[in-house]
Image (cartoon, rainbow, N blue to C red):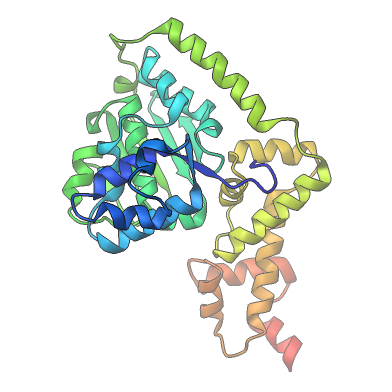
Length: 339
């Protein structure tokens, strides 16, 4: 988790790639003004730029170029992705090892990116990509992250079995197919990519095992500096409560999103929760119950409208959940309270 008071940051190489990708359509001075920079700053950036400044840049680019898949354009303009973790991924022996490296060292890439990995019986690998809700709504950073992941592991779309994205396509879908393969779906529940076992297990001619071992050791040291000791129970409980509140403000009641808010994987969240005898799923449900009861006090809202506000698929699903919480239907609870 990000240290208290510390603002998330983005590698300056990503910012430089964003500007390169957009300057043929937008004035460079316009882009730099969003960052509060000058042309000379392009050559003198430190290793990182504040995430808030980069978000402003993504928004500006998205407003000016609404039908351009900016994440894919930035990936093409980038000289490398994921920093030292990406460098490690480029020097291991197979794409499978590359994915393992990225997942293991995600926190050296960003404190708020989450890659969840699962392997099927046949050896295909699924990567679920998560970020803070407001970043996922920007969409372009998600495209960039997944494109970099494909580049590091299998090179191109021929190694991707399928891809699902939460957002709509920007512009021509062919740009996505060229990068990720033919099987791609938009406006789905998760950002998720499946890699084929065959592509992941190909041996790489340019692997450098000695360099990879050295980089792995350095990244482990870096992780220790980032993470430090586990937070005290009181502090972690407060951080968890705040993360649940932030997710609820986005109408998102998934434990997975709470983990993204904390900048850790869902598995890490469950480990910390067990350590401190906390129950994130029940805490999220309690947050949703309180939100439901608060919304139902507005009698101008129909039960269907409340269900939609709480991100239920329909009123029937909401009614089942509400009855499980209170023993009453939403309409029955309203009647008992206000009549």
